[in-house]
Amino acid sequence: MLVSLGGSTDSAAVILPEVTDSTIASVESNAAPVTGLVFDLFGRGGKIDGSTTVTPIQVPDTRQECDAWPLVRVRAPGSGWRVGFAGAHVQAIKLDSIEAMTSTDSAALAVSLAETAATLVNASDPAFRGLPFRVRSAYTFRLDSIHVVIADVVRSVNEEANPRIEHLLMIGEKRAGSIGKYTTGYYSRTAGAEETTQATEVLAAVRIGSSRKPAVVVNIEYDDGRVLGLIERVAPGQWRSLWRSAFTDC
Image (tube, rainbow, N blue to C red; front, side, top):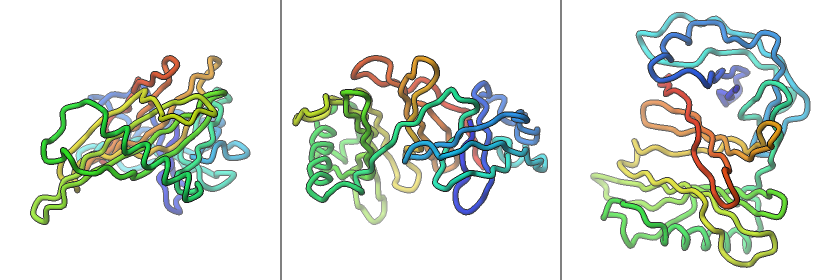
C-alpha cells in the first residue's frame, strides 16, 4: 500500500503489511519492492482516474535516528489522493463529508452523533463526564441499501494548565430511507493531554478483493509517530480493526 506524504511533494511511503514493530528498522534504507507494479490511487472522494507506476527513492541509512517506511516517487494522474493499492484488487467507495452537507443535514447528523456518543459504555476519565460532545470530522457513504457514517467525536477539558481531550471514533449503520439513528458497529475511545492524545484521520474507504469487503483506511497519529490501519466490515452492522501497520516515528 502507498500512503501520500501530503503537501506538494510527489513522494509516498510504501507500507509493507508483513513488517512489524520489531522489524521496521531493517526496511527503511532498502529499495521498496515495487518495481513493475501499477497502482490505483484513492482519496476520500473515490478513485483517482488513471493509474501510476512508482520509482523507488534511495535514502540514507537513518536507522539509529528513527523508523520509517521505504519511499517512492509518484507521478499521480490527479490530485487529492491519499492511499494507493497495487493491481486491480481494490474498488473505491466515495465519502461525503459533513462539511459538504446542507446546514440542516449537517446539524442533524452532528446532533445524532453526539447523542449516540453519550450512550456508549466504556471507561473514561471522570473529568470528561457530563461535558458536551462535538463532531471533529464525519463522513457518510452507502453500501447498497445501507448508509454508513464514520466520525471522530470529541469533548475537552479546557484547563489552562492541563488541557485534555477525548476522541471517540465511531462507525454506524442504518438502512437507507430510515429516519432513525445510526446503530454503532464499532467505536474506540482515547483520552489524555491535548497535545499527545492519539487522533485518527480517515484516508479513504474501499472494497477489497473478490469478496469486495468494505474497509476504511485510517491514519492513527500519536505525539511521536503514527500507524496505518484497516477497519473492516465483518458482518452486517459489525466493523472491526483487523490490521495495523508497524509504528513509524519519522
